[in-house]
Amino acid sequence: MSYPVTLIPGDGIGAEVTAAMRRVVDATGVRIEWEVQEAGAAVIEAYGTPLPEHVLESIRRNRVGIKGPVTTPIGTGFRSVNVALRKALDLYANLRPARSIPGVASRYEDIDLVIVRENTEGLYAGIEHDVIPDMAAESIRIITRPATERIVRFAFEYARANGRKQVTAVHKANILKATDGLFLRVAQQVAAQYPDIAFNDRIVDNCCMQLVQRPHEYDVLVLPNLFGDIVSDLCSGLVGGLGVAPGANIGKDIAVFEPVHGSAPKYAGQNKVNPTATILSGALMLRHLSEREAALRIESAVTKVIAEGQYVTYDLKAERDDPSAVGTQEMADAIIAAL
Image 1 (cartoon, one colour):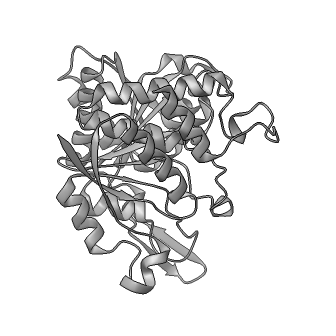
Image 2 (image 1 turned 60 degrees about the vertical axis):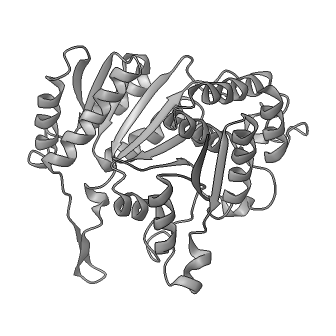
C-alpha cells in the first residue's frame, strides 16, 4: 500500500529540513508518493499569491500534506501561508505535543503535554482595519459555539484514544466574559459527555505560571486560537525549544503536518539546522496514516540519536560552538541508521 502526500518544502531552511524528513520517512519502508508543491514568497511573481490554488487542490486530493516553514512578513506583506492553509482547508485543530527528549537541555524531565488549539477563529480570523490611519486600529475576536464544541470534542476524543487522563480548558473568561465565557461554558458542556476523562479549567495567565512551576500537573490543554499559539510555544520551551516541536493541523478529512519553528532564512543552504521537529512531524503524519509502528520507530531513533549526543546539530550540543556538531543531513543519516 502507498500513500499520496503533498509535500511543501517552504522557504528558508524548509528545503533542507523537509529533505531530511523525507529520507527518514522513506527509510521506514512505508511507501509515500510525494507530490512536491511550492508555496511562499518565491511563487508570488508567477501566481500572484503565496498560496496558489493548485497547491490547495493537491492537498484536497491527497488529503494529507506536510510542509516546511514558510516566512511570514511582519507588519506588512502577504498574509501567513499557515493561517491561509488552515482557513482554506478548515484545519480546525492544531495539535502540538511537547514531550521531553533525553539529551535535550531543559529545566524539566518527563514532560508529556499535548496542546490542542482552535485553528480557525478568534483574533486569527484576521478581521481588522484602521480606525484612524496610523493612529488607531481595531481587530475583531470571534468565538462561536460550533467551533468551540468541535475543538473541545477533538481534545477529549484525542485524550480517550491515547490513554490521557485529563483535559484542561484554558481561557480568560474572567475578563472576556462574552467570548471566553462562551468558550468555557461550551467546554464544560462537552466535558460532561466524557465522564471517563477528568476536566478542569484555568485562566490563561495563571495557567502559564503553573506550567512553569509544576508542568507535570497538566496533560491535554485545549485553548482558543491566540492563547493556543502562545501557550504551545511556552510548552515547547519546557522541553527544549521549537527545534524539537512537531505539529499537526487536522480537519474533518484533511491533515497537514509541520514543524513549529520558523524559516530561519539566515541559515538557508548551510546544512546546519536541527531537523528534529520536521522529522517528528513526519512521525505524526505516519500515526495519522495508521502506520503507528513506523512512527514509533522514528520517535525511538530520534530519541536514541539525541540521547547519545554524537551525531547531532550544533544546537543540541552542550556548547554551540562544539566542532563535533554535524549537519542537517548527517543527523538524518544517524537517525536512519538507528531505525
